[in-house]
Image 1 (spheres, one colour):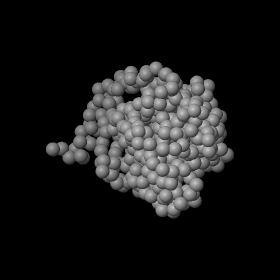
Image 2 (tube, rainbow, N blue to C red):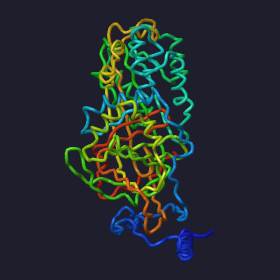
Image 3 (cartoon, rainbow, N blue to C red):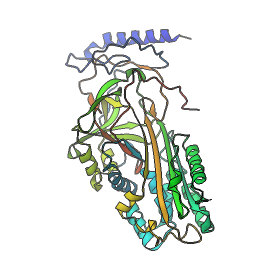
Length: 463
């Protein structure tokens, strides 16, 4: 069996022979910056002297491959999605006052929670939930839509999504409505649990233990003891966790310090990843932005990056995204697969938000009032006090909340002249999505800083 060194030597010899025999296939022309093995993102092509990481994998690139410039054949035409519409409305309400902070939240998990309460409501509360959630007339039909993702995980494939939802209600209010409890468990995989609201510290610890366990200890301390009082009737909590590997992974050997231009003119050195491969790319002149799609391996999910053309263009872009004509389904349909040199900063975000005020801004009022008509959750009407969500995302070379490994990738010494450039060196919007569903959305204002060298974590992805 040939050794790794032998395999490397053979690949180099084959590449050299191919170049000699097919010289006429590469006509002299003006190429972009030279792309090197390992530190391909460096303009000088020099490798740092302290980069001693061993190669664990080698990927051969077929230099004869002509990259497609048409949409992926499986991409459906853009259609109206009530999940996308809800995401767009909520996104604008949440990010508008938080332009200088990193933001991430899960529209899907909050939407699922509202869909669950929709089935427990009547009267004005029912109508407000229908309008804000953009729901159809039938709560059962809405529940079926969420069940396909939560229980059957239809678009997820190899990606891992855990959505944990629970209603903690004041035990002094009486018993649970068992028919509704079965409905919530069957469609939403959600639970209901009585707690002692008079013992705030113990109840907060109980809820936090459940959240940490549901998110592999990534989300902790969601609820504080002063969030809970003896007058509280119900607290709705959902925790969401996602993990997926990129279809085209970035090499940690190519992650280099690069300048990032923050809102307001500040700059800093961040850990900038680099890869050149086939990605979905679209120019969006009406949004004054560019869209890039990074697919997850063996999954129908992907991360969509929306990069403003101007350094301070994020507020304007986010304002536009709240309009129905710019829902992410329509944006995704315009992507064209082509060869792209991608520079994307690593980022890690933990974001906590009481969703009550954004939902009230959208018109969901009575559910939080003493006149609440959430009548089917318990044996008596119940008022929702708070809806809490805390989200966590870690984007690196291997994917989202995934560990990285060292590898080298053979590429042409010069990129083809038609290769596009995508450099996210300024604040941008991101969304983890599947068709008709936005799992996470947010914006990046402060990426991961470059601290000497971003060493890879041990590969625990499959553990």
